[in-house]
Length: 290
Image 1 (cartoon, rainbow, N blue to C red):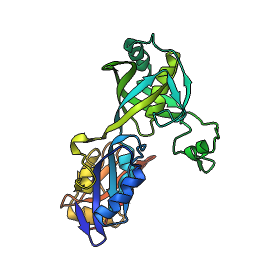
Image 2 (image 1 turned 45 degrees about the vertical axis):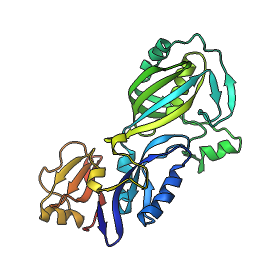
Image 3 (image 1 turned 90 degrees about the vertical axis):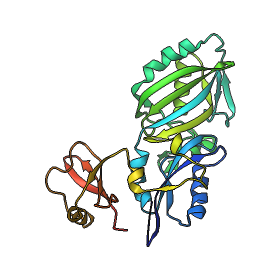
Image 4 (image 1 turned 135 degrees about the vertical axis):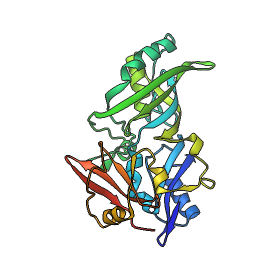
């Protein structure tokens, strides 16, 4: 954690409870942390629980690097019932007799979804089309054409839900931008029916897991470097750190690979994050001393 003259700086790993919007958590955090400079790294639906990483102070400028990390979810999907929100909060729009579907059937179909796939964003998502968020249009009863978007399912494990033959539980690690509700619905559609999510929990954002998450009031403020632990870090001399903070380029071969790179000063504090843009390496964020 760092606290400069501009207030607290860092990240907070929160275990979001059901019933709270991500905006609710941010608003509450502003009061708990005593600063207006709080944002989050990726929306969780009000009914969903689990890890929500908050950026605080200078951490808000680095949130896009947390947003870009793979995320892990555990969800229970109910077979045979579709809703207009793809989860249990919506209205039932269609039912199917899927009593003959076995967990082995679901596992077989799910295998085809591992790797790069394309998803059509649901109408209840927050993306914008022609300046309007889809969920705003959905509340007005409107449906618009959405183009498929590429995502990657890194892993997808399916198991039975104890005592409920009409549902399946799946754990997935996926790229940023994946719609987990759509994943369940698409698997069910391939089985000749439909489904909706009954529960959804985010269990990891990159290396930030449930073991690191706390209720908001108890969650510690961690340093910028700890929040960016998933990225390659490079330790700089005091001279190089000063150059970086003044916008100068690093000499030599300090930055290898594809990046992004977290550049640490002689005290282990983040001086900047650099990234590769086409064939050039440039500063994405510069963090002042303090």
